Length: 231
Image (cartoon, rainbow, N blue to C red; front, side, top):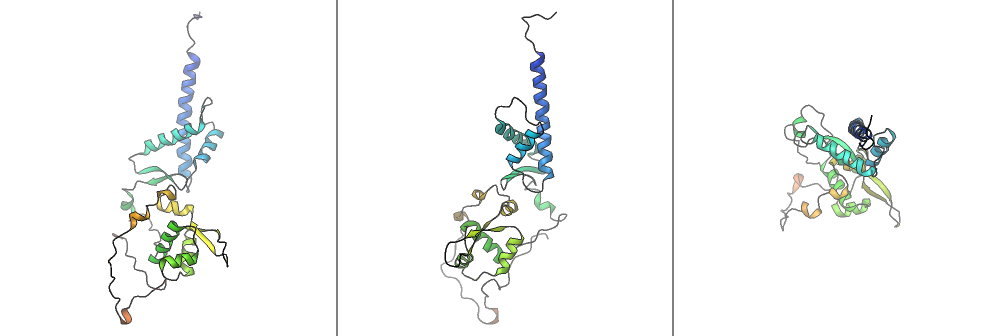
């Protein structure tokens, strides 16, 4: 016979086992979700799937905190391994550990490299967005070819953000989520401050050479982008 004064331990133990089982399932499900997605997966989307698939214990008071703890546990599990869990572009994604990425260049296809003029334009858009084509040209000091904008659009690094309410209503350009993914940024707040990128510039620039070797100006000038070391 059961002692009526003896506390019933069966139900609490069963609940503990159930919670441990659900937590383990949550970790595995979140891991599979992020692994299966090519793009970063938002915390909200992860929470919705966990809730729909029974991945959150029924007695959880704060579901957002539970999802955050699950992501933190998964990140800790992958810490120091060949891939790591990172928050990028408003979501979560598995990425190669930074110290190993250079060692993969000989076995992985090399991504297309952007020309210098294209990178300059992208940097201006990133730090001055939203901005118009004319404003980009004013900052660069040279004309901006349509090909540069087309290249950035094709690479999904920029996107139109509407039109500026001035005569002609020019398009306003800004960076996209693809920009954040490409550079591994959580959001635009992760960009280095412009002050950190400044370099010492000589007071007087040397005179450009005369004749056929004179420097060319604008986006028609040849880009001088060095090859990646070890290529």
